[in-house]
Figure 1 (cartoon, rainbow, N blue to C red):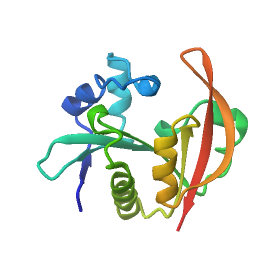
Figure 2 (cartoon, rainbow, N blue to C red):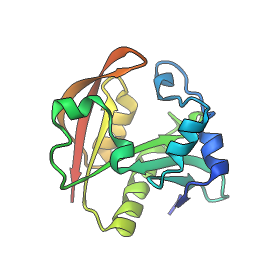
Figure 3 (cartoon, one colour):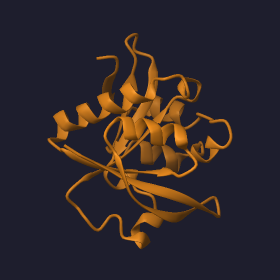
Figure 4 (tube, rainbow, N blue to C red):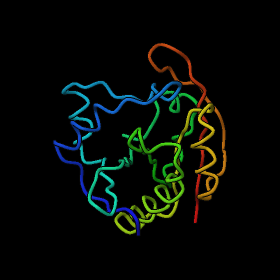
Length: 162
């Protein structure tokens, strides 16, 4: 196992809230404010650390992983799976860590929550992430639009069941 997972802490929430991604991925940036820190500390988020205990990413699950436009599109009507979201530290993206990061995060969730079916949504332009999800057994189940900073962005719903 390359990564270890632990509950989100105040310090790690503050660090993650400052992460800034390069365009076009910068719409994944958080705003550094108390509301975001509260969100990251709501119990749905956990941190991922590498083998020398450096914060490398996070996962979230449940309502925290849902994209608002998905409700109108009906993708959240089936409650028999766990919604997940994730993020790698910006300097670690595009370096080949994604496949193992996603696999180990899902394995952790399976162990902690005894869940076997997962759903996630990803911006359709994010081909790097889509490739990683497909490599981890996710299949596309539909598309929808959701507003991000006032702009409609197309998202893909992906499902993994095993």
